Amino acid sequence: MGCGAREVADLLRAGAATIAEHRAELIDLDRPIGDSDHGENLNRGFTAVVSTLDTAVPETPGGVLKIAATTLISKVGGAAGPLYGTAFLRAATALGDRAELDAEAVFTALRAGLRGVVARGKAVVGDATMVDALSPAVDAAEAAVGDGIAAVLAAAADAADKGADSTVPLVARKGRASYLGERGVGHLDPGARSTALLLRAFAEAAR
Image (cartoon, rainbow, N blue to C red):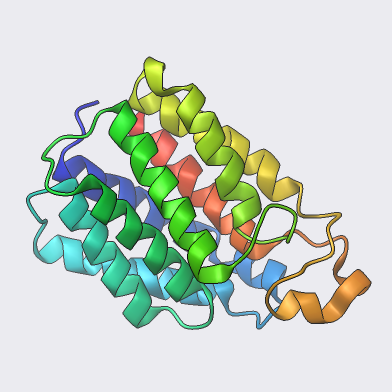
């Protein structure tokens, strides 16, 4: 696929549709270990992102991601807004003014997003957060750079699915779930799940 600003906007629209589809699932995942608002908050944020992009699409992929970042930060409450907003903002900054993305640029954006999430949330793999999905996704994306954009996103999505599943037996060390201690074991982290859902949506849209 060619990957200019309009294609990146289409990936975000696909992500928004997936979040809307899984809104109730994310609420249910968040209910026993959080505020029950992860699905609702993300759905509101990504709906706003699509609404903004329907008005005008910036000229560069980085510009599109910056709109996503600022919209999510302003519309999504709790920890998810700042974390996802920071991820998209760091990705936008990493892409700069380039008009078209190749596989290396997509990996660079994913890596920058991960670094932003880690810097904002101070989480590492094993804390039962979105980092458990995003970190292995970035590693898998790097390994697939030579195979093109679609392969990069597919590899990232596959790794994110496994990473999200890996949070189930973990004791959460960040966020409200950490208050539960051992009682939180057995729950899929909703942030890791939403990260995996978004990457899967991006991968499907890029095929």
